[in-house]
Length: 164
Image 1: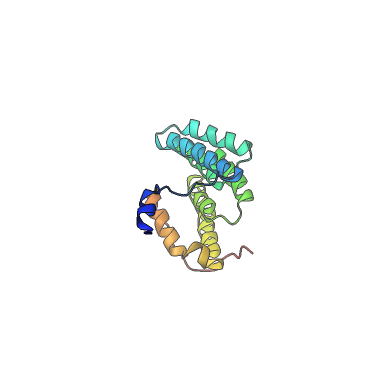
Image 2: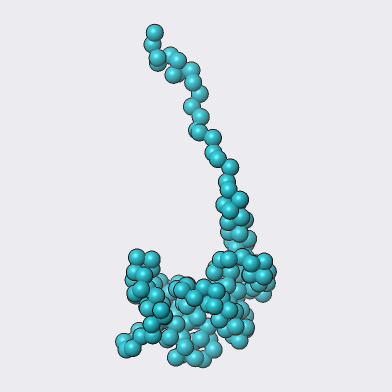
């Protein structure tokens, strides 16, 4: 008896997918809401984007991207003092976040504080130096910031503050 005719009769179906975990469903829902808020920001609806971010933060969404979106939306509306407050609150929660510190650079430049802006970049360099496998290299991160924000990042040598 040949096996080939029997195999030809079996339908080819992919294996059944397991149901997503509750955590995976929640992450998907959060990403969807964040994507919608990001669209508001991208279409110039900065107040609505900031409001959506504030709502998510108040609902205890533990994703730094909400803080970044809120701060950037406030900056886009010229609300520098509010953006600085949001940035500092977000940084309290995400102390080792390179992305938050890069937003800090923009916040402090808008606030007219070039020393604090430079310190934000020094902090990025320090964090990247402490965890090179996590962040790659600091200069690449700074170059990406320049490319995406259109802001020229001033590089300097000198003493660095240790974040440990």
